[in-house]
Length: 288
Image (cartoon, rainbow, N blue to C red; front, side):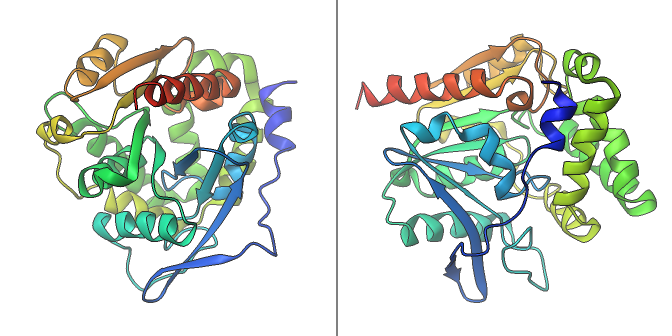
């Protein structure tokens, strides 16, 4: 099945009977929980919604509890007058875990949400069993490159809209291999998902927030949780060598390179991505 056909068949509808959880005053989060076992919580990167993860977590859910949710001010969660701060988004993660009775979880962050994963691990080390950072936005000295990229996306979004933004980011974050293999059907199929999941206002809020927060690479050395960086060898921000150098900044970090994958490597090889996460969890749990 081609990339385009997969995307066209993806179900992005919300479950009408899905409960919301209250995490703080005025905030209720839409979430989905599948499977039983050790919890694995996926953090959205502002471009994704909870239903999107179903096809990319099905293998993990066979032996783990997979939790996905919409961040406040995005998707089907509470819409607020102002975008929450990183600290408030982190508080929502903990509130979600509390409501679901999850004492500790593996956190999976992708792209911009690796910053949220970092902040949760620093503020609540006892709640994080391990970190998986896919396509991390951190650099060896700071996050300037990522923020420049996001500013350009924000300018395009505000000036030309969602379709123009998609046209810009597709060749930047999708691997060359996936671009060639998917061709026009792949481009159009993923565009349908992108347009269905996002609004100009929600994305503008997220891309604006991405410009904020501490950029110091020194923060990474304070993270106690075992950390796995999952990096596509065709990532726009980090080369494989830089990925390994970045992993060395963590107290207990390593880097796994996914071949022929881009900035969001789970799109290129969903099964391989889940296998990497599962093996990392087994490795960490064996040392507990």
